[in-house]
Image (cartoon, rainbow, N blue to C red; front, side, top):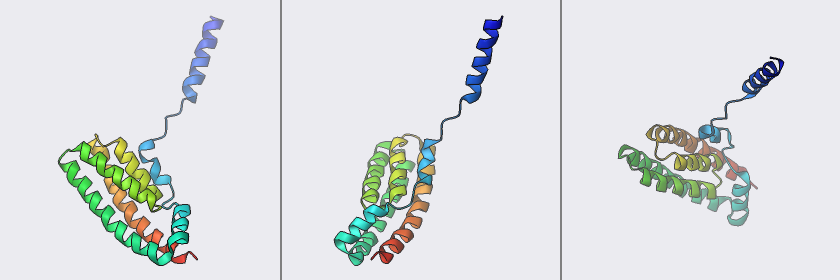
Amino acid sequence: LEKWGRQADMRAIQEASVVAPPDLSTAYMDAALLDEDILSALTDALGNGKVIELLDEVWPAIDTKISQIRAAMEARNSERILQLAHEVKGVSGNYGSLRLSLAAAQLEREADDPACVARHLDRMSETVAQTRKSAVQFVGSAS
């Protein structure tokens, strides 16, 4: 009985110490909006004015891709969602939009789940607006 009692106690301890895994599907929301190292490297290489000019071209392209992802979601075309999410991930990462790039990467992983796609699209749209403002402020203040 003593042996079984200890085993039962050990199982209870093990079960009590089990922690639910974090929800990685939205972990990107805790990431920094910007990768300041990338933006700094761009401004050092190209100058503030050119980077702002490039960002002014990038944001409408990203907005278009997000609209295309929405259309693909409505058409239940997970392959197209995957392709567009990959493009957003790459472009946003190249221009220092860390959180948006991570969100697009998560969307790539969950492209087959319409509920997840809708959730990520809403968050990506919010993130674009926040990132656009922060990136322009960061580049404008860079010396």
